[in-house]
Length: 288
Image 1 (cartoon, rainbow, N blue to C red):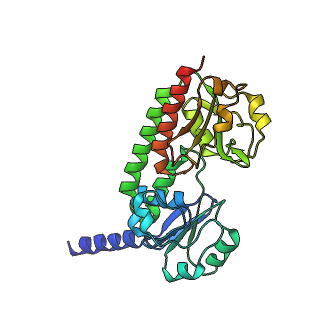
Image 2 (image 1 turned 120 degrees about the vertical axis):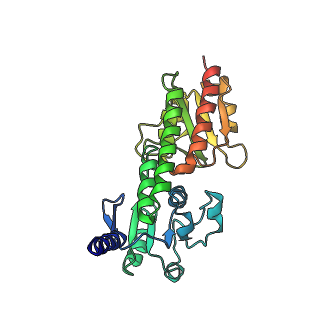
Image 3 (image 1 turned 120 degrees about the horizontal axis):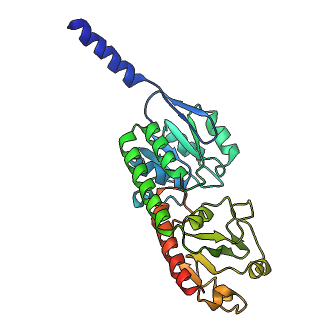
């Protein structure tokens, strides 16, 4: 009996001390001696995904514009997409720093790496990648149960939207993300992915950039059925509403939609995707 108890104790100790190994979105294996309980998140989408993974209470520092969920607004800000406060990050004593692969300044990340703090590169570009990212974040923080449950709920909600709008008439969409200069979404933008799920397609889906700059003439030439934007100051779509040569204007399909998280590649995007789908369906009924 005593030998069995000792063996069980040894096995339990071994499991507790087992290193955590997770492959990040740069293809690197990140190894932690124990679950990360002091995490610095350097992108709003990373912060949001950490909360969905059940690790929100472990986030000790975050980046500017980390506003989802609401609790993230109360975490100390240590920088933004252009500059990081390295001294403040070090003072937080993180056991893991999570960076945006294509957005966090490489020079700043190099300086952090020299400190010997484990770094995880995150880059979610498609809606279907969000549940997998949530699960991996749960592995890193030791909160797999919550992460797996929320990842499954997100997948089911996404599948429900896809089923509801599959087979409906597809609409050509000009999605304006800025007006001066005129910018839209290309194939590499998650908004394009959301449009496709809702039965739409960006008229500039042939462009590989995430946010290409385009000309007014190019929009007129491609004749979108719908022109939309998500929020913004003033009525940036006013010129399009007056463009009688545009089918979207004639059908009354020039609209501002209330979808503040549509460009956020993390779990909080879901309500905005649902709004997008519903607004496109309304436009569909107005389109001959």
